[in-house]
Amino acid sequence: MALTALDIYKLLPKTNCKDCGFPTCLAFAMQMAAGKATVDLCPHASEEAKETLGAAAAPPLPKVTIGTGGSEVVLGDETVLFRHEKTFYHPTAFAVSVADDLSPAAFADRLRAIRSLSFERVGQRISVDLVALRCVSGDPAGYARAAASALTATGLPLVLLAPAAPLATAAEAVGGSRPLLAPPHSDLEAAAKIAAERKLPLRVRARGIEGLSAALRSARAAGAKELVADPAAESLADAVADAIHIRRLAILARNRDLAYPAAFDLGDPFPDPFGAAALLIPRYGSLLVLDTADPAEILPLLTLRQNVFTDPQRPIQVEPGVYPIGNVTASSPVLITTNFSLTYFTVRGDVEASRVPAYLLIADVDGMSVLTAWAAGKFTGESIAKMLSGCGIEEKVGHRTLILPGMVARLSGRIEELSSWRVLVGPQESSALPPYLRRLPPAAFDPANA
Ligand code: SF4
Image 1 (cartoon, rainbow, N blue to C red):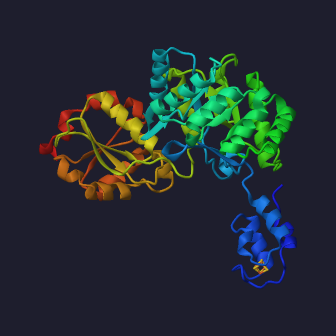
Image 2: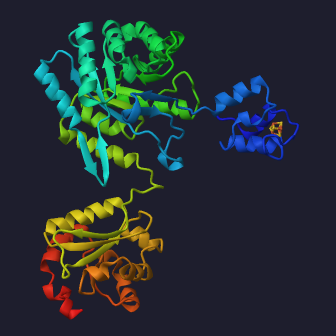
C-alpha cells in the first residue's frame, strides 16, 4: 500500500529545519505522499528512511525496455488501474511471429509482411512493434543467423522465443539490440543467467499466479533484473483473469513479487487469439505475441490500441487553418469544422468522397469535436466570424457562403450578424456530406452573387 503523509512523517527527522525547501517536516511529508517530492530533497533523512521511502516512491509497475534507439519499446511503468485516474503511459506492444525454419525466401517474405503492418490513422502512424522469432529448427547457429536477419530486415526489436542454447547464440549475435529473452519454463534458470550477464530483459513464463510468483523469484535470484511476467494462460478467460489479477496486485496491493508487465503468447494453439488480443489490450496485456500478419486482423487491433491509449485530456489535434481539397477554385464551397483529429479526417474523407473540390476551414478549439466545442463555448458565432475574416479564405474565394455543421445550426444567425457571410446549414452527420455537396446549386458559390 502507498504510504500516508503520517507514515512518511514518522520516518523524517522532525526538526523542521526547512533545508528541503518546505516549512516543516509534515509539509514535506504531505508533498511526498502526493507524489510531488522525493526523499532525496531531505539531506538529514536516515539511510533506513531513504530506503523505505525510496522503495515506496518507485512506480508500482516497473519499466521494462526492449530494443534501443528510436524503435525501443517500453512496457509497464504504469501508476493507475484506470485511465480516468490519470493516464496510461505505455500502450500494449504487438510482436508478430516468424519461425526460424522457413526457407530463405519464405522467411524474407514473412519479414516484409511484418514490416508492412504500419498504417496512417487520424494523422498518426500505428504499427506493430516487435518481431517474435520462434525457434522451431532447434539449431543454435541457424537461430542466431535468423535473429540477425530479422533485426536487419525490419529494424524492429526482437522477442527471442527459444530454449537456452539458441538463446545464448542469439544473445551473442544480437544482444546489443536489447532483445527480450523468452525461454520455455524448463530453461528459465539458464536463460536468467544469460539475461543477468548481458543485462537483457527476460520473459518469465509459468502457469498460474503461484507458479509465476515462484518462477519470478528464481529469475531474480539468478540476477535477472528487467522481467516480464507470462502466466501461460491456456484460454481467453484465464488470460484476462490473470492479466487483471497481476495488475491489481501491482497497483493496489503494491505486491513486488508479481509487479511486472504481463505478456501473453497468443500463437498457435491458443484458442481465439484475435478475441483474446481485443480483450487484453484494455485489460493490462503489456505485450502480445501474435502469429497473424494479416492486415485485416492487425489493423482493428492497432485501432483499438490507439483509442484505449490516447490520453483523453490531450485529444489528437490537427493544425487549424484553411485546407483545400481537390482542384479548388474561387467558386468552391467552403465548409467549417473543428480541429479534433478524428473529426477532421472524417469530414475530409467525406468531402473527398463527394469529388466536389472544396475548402475546409479547421477552427482551433483545443482538439474538441463540434458539439463538445460548442458546449464548451469554443465554437461560437463570434469565433467563427473572427476566423472567416482572419484566416485568408476571403482572398481565396469570390463568394461569401459558408457551410456550417448541422449539429450547430443555431450558430448561423450570429455568424451572419457578425460577418459578411451567408450560412448554409449542412448535414448533421458527416457521412451525409457527399450527396449534400453534389446537390448544391453552383449559383450559391458564384462570385457574381457575393
Ligand atoms: Fe524536515 Fe528534512 Fe525538510 Fe529539514 S530537510 S524540514 S528535516 S524534511
